[in-house]
Image (cartoon, rainbow, N blue to C red; front, top):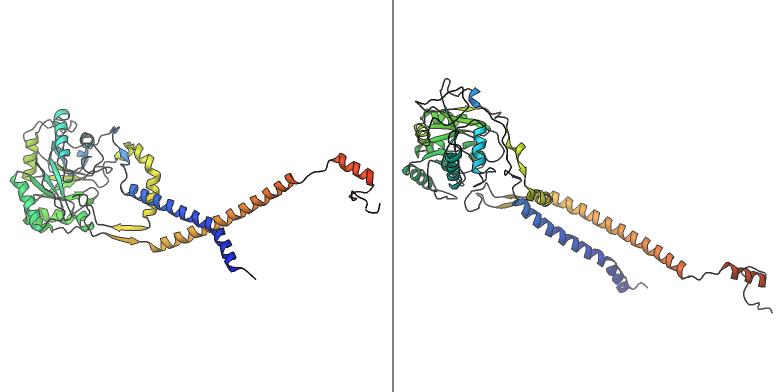
Length: 415
């Protein structure tokens, strides 16, 4: 009769090592997944710009102005970001990038941060004053709108979810200190599900300019509306890290010694002249959706820290593919996002991963058991051969001669 207790004990002792290996494997996988997902969600910068070299230049004056026959001698980019917020270039590198792209005026507008523009302005004054003029500013960013505040020297308090009145108060505060307000990228605000006021509301609240072309997209409806109410219009590269220049907002500084046959420069106008021209709203723009053809990605230097952690980032990306964390766009206020947090699990992917893991683990255990059995069998045979006494040829021969029979007993029982 089978001893069930003994049989169960035997089975338990047989599978216990496999169970321990399973627990250890899952524990290691969980720790690796957590660490790698954390690194993936907060990776180091992929590129550094320390050794950035811009060895090209572009002259946009071959492009046709939107307003036919509009004369200009100032080419402005009113929107860009530096390493003081989420840009990849330092203030000075950003200046060099704009000079190479045919600008002689720019405004640094980091997210809720004024320092980048102050640093850039000081550098431009000291080193590049005859090539480009830099005005101060910031991009007031939140979960309802992104507004550029231009020509200011103080930070406007960021608010994650401003009310209509909060937005109006911020616009009024900028105007009270002599600044200019631009409503940025309406299409992006719509696509990102920001609860943005309408362009009609912004116009009623005193916005000075509307951004009608940002990077690769052109907002025709906002252009038509802005022109219908005589509001200012501008193009913006919204440069962060890798897009070539596509738009130039153009003005004409009067009574200058500007020479169109000379390289683009800023020797014939001042920061004050530039600011007054922006306030006048008498401008046009150049726009080429194909861009300049010069992308700084080809000259970026890889970040060694990113390369060091790249394997963890890739593993984190793999584990991150099992779920989607919905949080809305980044608010740029206190490190928070705009939407309610929700998690979507890809149950089918999880189910099939568990299935394949089980198949491979069981297959590995079976293979391991077979190899262990083969090893033990071979070892047993080897030990048997070593421990079995061997009879020498000489002894065997003497025994045969004495008894005359191979394999005869040593004692002749009949004697």
